[in-house]
Image (cartoon, rainbow, N blue to C red; front, side):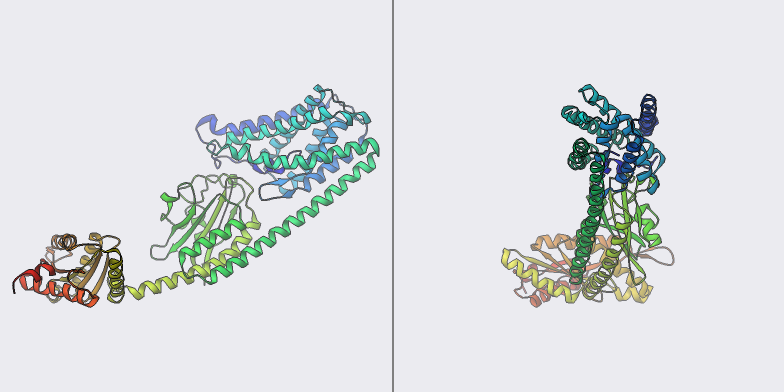
Length: 590
């Protein structure tokens, strides 16, 4: 085919899997258009060939063989692939006419590209018709500008018509593909189908047009044998370039995997593992969307972490069940999967909330010691971008990430357990003590205060004796829940011991701390935490004491002592179910 392979790579057809959008004929318009161009172009070529007389069957056969080799000798790049077929079909159109050139190109594309990779029939028909129509229109431009066809040597001097032939083919070919892709994917940025492929095709034309012109010149000055030998050099060069491109890709993969291993060895943070995963994926698999999902063993679902997506803020933290979308399927089977073209699985999504996959996508499971740790998935809106080679190298990356993510998760869980109370899940007193000291130091720097609330559950022993320890535990859990709902994210709550809790409120004055403590006291008093055998609600109350740094104390231990004193002197001894402020106690006459 005369254009770059970028166009052809996009033309893999599907039904409902593409984002064709819209009901009725609009949803099927891209298929109607593809069949119209494909069968129409082929019919036009067949009709035109009826009046063509072949002057040299040997030359036609040789050019057809070159066309097959050109299609087979494409060079795969990250942005597309470059086919040298233009260098064959350009001189073929001048020497044998656009009708025969279209036939040669069709045979070459069919035998050199379609059959080896078993392309979808509709895609193949469209590309064949597209090639024929583009060459025939371009040939008309060539003739209109006074160009001559045939094996006569004067034809090579038709510079202006030759330029018209080249430009005409580029415009028609590019237009046919752009219209088709715009019909199929109406919600995708138009630049994806008009600007980006044009850049790749311009590179192809810049390489192949001079070679085609050189072949024509050699036909004129040295004869067919010398001219045809240029193609041998061209195909050898294309094959060498393919090898070099592949070696460069392998080197890039190995370098990226080595750097990733080195980075992962030095991290024990889950968020840092996700950052490293994205950097590595960017080097190993071209994509415009990516998502890292952690496996939550508690709920047995995937949880969306870091991602590259237009709706990233809305999707982060979303939960996905095994079997849902591509990532859920990979989590369920624990086997990597690549979708080269979205048409192969109509309606398949990368994640449930995403649009159907219109291009390529892959997902790999992160499995450590036989346990699922997470899933890494990427996609790109261009079909054919991702393949089994990308799946292979991403699977290697997944093995490294799984080990690192599992290690980081275990470390962070151990760190969390070291600073939390096992029964309530809030911070333990040892961690609280260090945090309180840090907050007091910050308050010194900022010239602010830190208030401390000391809370005690009233009559917890009586609850245990009357209803059992399970009910006493329920009372503790209810108080912890109320505390969590009543404080800010900057505040720090911890279990002091037994039925006692402490809360540090950075920047809070006594009046602000009193409001928080009262909110907690009232909520606990009003909320039952259980029921009796007679189905009557069981409630409890709390007492609290407040002290503030630096008003009431200058040291951590002194501040805790003052708050404890306010709790027992100001609240407990005065009937419980109340809040006392140390500052108020100290101002009262002894």
